[in-house]
Length: 308
Ligand code: BEZ
Ligand code: FE
Image (cartoon, rainbow, N blue to C red; front, side, top):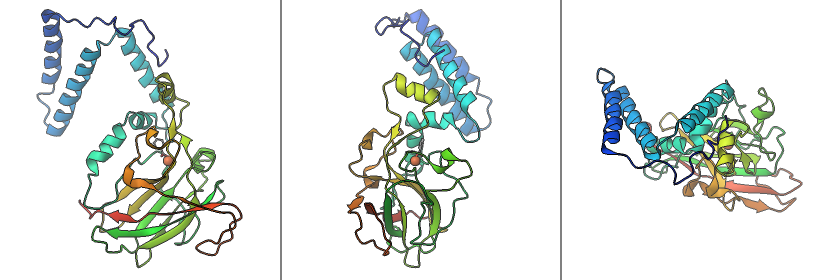
């Protein structure tokens, strides 16, 4: 069974007229299913289940779902289950491409004063990244144009946060994360700690666009609806400090060809930064010799207080 339910129901030929008797049958079923949760003692679980059922039935009734479409949806979810394992999580990809991940992040990381905004986590974080000194290099041989990244980590009053942990990770210029090449490989990722004055800097790679894993049912869905699997170019950050709310975010180069068409809807205006292109052999901030072109970007990070 394919992702596309086919054209047995041409738009406009769906039986949309509903008699009062039929409406009563459908409403009675919704009421019965809702009532089946009456005895649930966990009130939050009850709220979630009742609302889910109401919205699900609302969807089925609004689009007048056919049995063939229902089978197609079940087959899609079954394929998503089969392709999911410890490293491939098709349901998160589905949530990401439907904007559900981003909406959950929006709700749970609401704007706090001037704190830096959050965006999607993505599936390519690993907990055991190498530690580098500030001013060090996260690249470890990954291909791409060098990029000098610098900035500060402060609280919302501008006070420097010394010793904040910064995790950074990114795809290389071939559009691959290290773990996609080899599960044991660590490249274009590292962690470092801010200096006493809250500053940090490191060498990474100028971000480039790459496709999300699209060889499974989510890729088929994107193709069926004419959507690209490409993410806007980005560099991932996760920044934590004992006195602050942990921030999961990215920065996005301005002028990126994908930009707002990011397939997981992660782009936010405040996270678009200017990556200044530097000519080949021009002097670098730390005196390192770089043969070709390189870029530099500033990202000043403001963390909300813990519990905000
Ligand atoms: C990523 O940025 O690494 C990513 C985010 C969502 C889905 C796939 C990849
Ligand atoms: Fe990414």
